[in-house]
Length: 275
Image 1 (cartoon, one colour):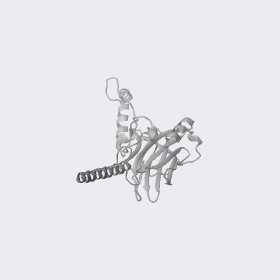
Image 2 (cartoon, rainbow, N blue to C red; image 1 turned 30 degrees about the horizontal axis):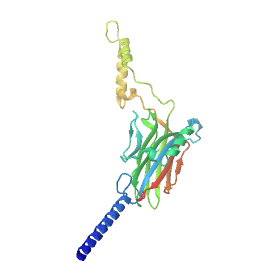
Image 3 (cartoon, rainbow, N blue to C red; image 1 turned 60 degrees about the vertical axis):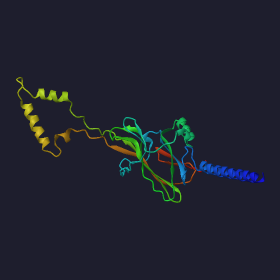
């Protein structure tokens, strides 16, 4: 009986020890899991960015930047938020729901104020370890400017990590240049009327037709031919304002980068394994 009792005792202790190890293992796994059940890496953050436009007349902007030279926007293939001509939104990031963002309450206040137009509110989860070098994230929001075939606010935002997180904002705010549209191309009806007017009653080419033929030959002899003379030039754009700023960030601090017409709210939340 004593032997059986010892065996039973040893079996019970082994069972308890095994259960304890299993519990500790499950606890560690739970601590290393995020909301989606995925392993949380080191230096894991939720990055949040909000782009807004001040509702102000362009004439009220004192900065004169129409003739400022602007470097081309960097293209990396990574998209934060763009809206094409048809209103289709595109991003290459796995964005979190807007309701989950810490900045969502600020966005709601800004929209209610009537002084700002929120053009983008985005957040996503990503690891930013020391030495992280981010790729430029493409942005194109605001009204569509048909003359320049672009949105009025475009550029890119880059996130790097040295000792601290750094956000580099490179955004341009464009406006349509006044009086820059060229004359439209002749319509088919107009061309037919010109042809008819250049013929005599018998339908034979008249003096006007000969003059048109001579003029056509003259234009074709010029560089780019007659097509270059008739093609409407795209209306150029004027730079209204821009943002060129690199800001060092601290976790859980709201930063505001702005120009007279455009503002960017930035917030980083470090995600701990216990969360």
